[in-house]
Length: 128
Image 1 (cartoon, helix red, strand yellow):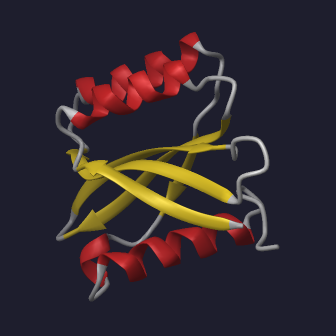
Image 2 (cartoon, one colour):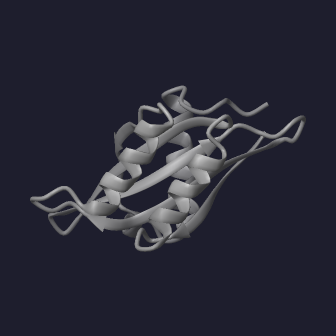
C-alpha cells in the first residue's frame, strides 16, 4: 500500500481547506492527527487527516498542513477550527510530538520519518 503525505500548505488558509476535506470525506477518515514540534524553543502544530483507500485502490493519502500554526498562550483559531470540524464529525484527533521538519535535509525524509512513527504506533496500516 502506498502511503503518502499530500501537503496542502503550511497552515494558513489551507487549514480551512483541510477542514472541508475532512467534512466531505468523513466516512473515509482513518485518523486525524495534531503533530507538535519544536524549533528554537518555539512550538508549532501540524494538522493532518489520513483517509482510507477508495475501493480497491492501493493508495492511503495523508493530507497535512505542516508547521504553520505556532503554539501561543491563547489557542490558535486555526487549531480551534480544525478541532471543531473533527468534533462535528465525531473524530477524536491523536496528538503526537515529533521532530521539526527543519531537522531533516529534505521534506521527503521528514514525511518518511512521520510514516515510520505512525506505523510503529499502529496508527496507519503496515506495508503490504
